[in-house]
Every structure is written in C-alpha cells, then in structure tokens.
Image 1: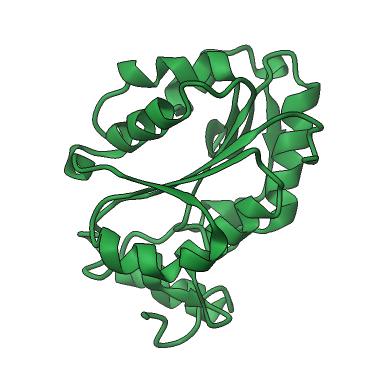
Image 2: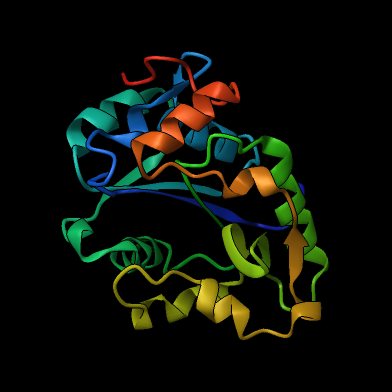
Length: 207
C-alpha cells in the first residue's frame, strides 16, 4: 500500500530531447545512478499499482537503462510537440486507471522518496485529491493529480502541463510540498555545474 493508502499510479515523464543542454539529461548521474533510473526507482518505491514511463528522444538507449525496474514503457513519437504530448501519452495508457496519479520528471536531482510520499499523503487528505510542489508560489511537479483531472490531459498543448489546471483549484483544497531544492532542475550546462557543486550530480555525470 502506498503512503496515501490509495490505488495510485506513477507516471514518469522522460521523453524530452534536452536540446538546451546538448546531451540527454536522463543519463546524468547521481551517486552512479542515472537520473532516469533514479526517478523510476523512487516512484516504484511508493508501491504504485501502475508504474509507467513515457520515453521519446533516444528511447531505445534509455529503455535499456531501466529494464531492471519492470516499468511499463510507452513511446511518445510526438515528443517534439512538448510536455503536453507526453502527458497525453500517459493519460491514454492510464485510461482504465481509477485513482490518483503521481507525476514526476527526471531532471530534479534533489528529488527524494520523502517528497513523493508527502505528496501522496497530502493528496489523500486534500479536498481536491491533488497535491503539488510549490514553485515560486505556483503548483508544479512532482505532483499528484486526481483521476478526474487526469482526463483533462487531452486539452493540454505545447509545454503546458497540469500546473495551470492545478492553479485553478482553491489553494486550500490542494496539498503542497515546499522544498526550494526541487526548483533546481536541469536545463542548461550551468544547472549541471551547480548540481555537481551541491553534490546532487556526479562530476562527469553523463552515462
């Protein structure tokens, strides 16, 4: 049973091409483990009923790197259209799922299991059934969305995720996780250098 005591699914979004970084951020390493493997492993440790990973760019190489984790892997052939297309791929794969969905990416090297457990527990207590990480006052990922909200993925476009939909909820109906370290995502080389300096990525961190 998960920390939320509910039948949750876990959805890991890892389809991006890391254009701004110039190399696959999924293959950067923390403590010898790729960020993709680490994200899937942490999600698996929440004991989801479904463990789903959406890949796109470099999918064959990345698939091999998580083969040991038993995840259901779906390929988003339209990954260049942005985040929304990966959420739609995930939502389609989870169309028969009833219950909350834990959504995370693999470019937040400070992510820990405790963050995911807090989101699941918070969502179980919240009026909306949702929980989000607070980024500059706005909801973002990792997050837990209700199955009702998950059905709205088809309306998303471009790089818009569920943040805008979560922001429409009254703040008191949403559970929050506050940790500034989760705002340290990886987009450009300077982000890698900062994460290495903080001990959140290995030096020479590419696979």
